[in-house]
Image (cartoon, rainbow, N blue to C red; front, side, top):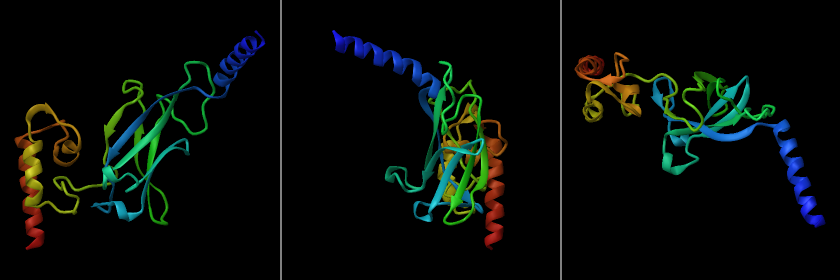
Length: 202
């Protein structure tokens, strides 16, 4: 009987104390994509860190190459919690409504702010989104800082026509007019980028 009362007491204390320390852990928000520095795609051996900060406090980080299946891509998990239970904010977590500043650091260099991502309530917990970091050249699928015919097969795959929303890497690379679809208007822009690349190489 004493053990039963003790167990009830411990559960009651935990239920009271934990909310006052931090909110309820929620599914993380995940950003993924590729990192570009000076228009060049960064690769696993390049010693590149991606760090998310809210109010200067780190809430997630990823080092390129740490997960072999991801190859040269990053997958940044932003630790999330809910304060709906009345808990106090954790020291290294984000909340819906926050804005996460995304930094990139290469080698011993300084962190550089490359993006800001709104943790909007409409997206919710467990949200996953493709987001390339840094400036990349439109039309350059393979990240070699030039638009060539080697980028065309992927354009053909991504082009689904007007009013068909594209996802993943496709809009980041081939949606020249930022209307969420990839159609003949984008193809004309791709042709111009291709012609400009050929003129530079000739």
